[in-house]
Image 1 (cartoon, rainbow, N blue to C red):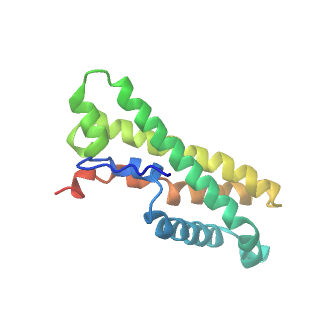
Image 2: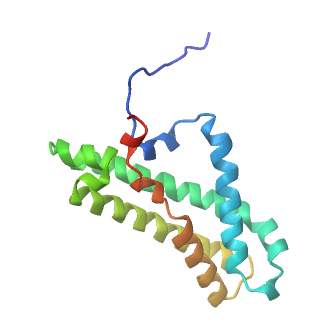
Image 3: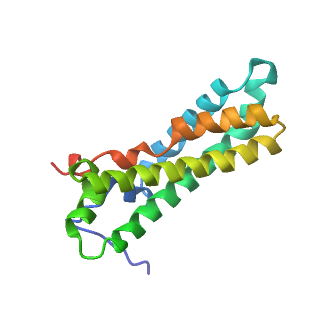
Length: 161
């Protein structure tokens, strides 16, 4: 018999919700895919055959985006433990990074780390897919800038008010 687990009256940081499988994923995954595909398409030169290239590679780019978002949120979670007994900082990182300058710095660093990972991995994927180094750099940079997990900045307390 399968045991069901329910959580009542638990407040989660919005960036931690990506770790919990839910119906939200049914909207999140296709939305992420189409955003990644759009950015990839727009970043490619017209002479490349953008539609075919996107058909073959957009799913890889989307998977990398999710992976890097998970890594960024895992690093944020780890940072909560590293804050020690500074509950104000931990609370600000979790629920409202704009309430503490140190928390805002931490969250921005995590977004930058995720964006850098997106850039590095996407550049490798795009190079292996046949793009020249200049085009792979340009597309990977666009993807990193436009698809970095800015969701980390959204105050979670907006959901609970």
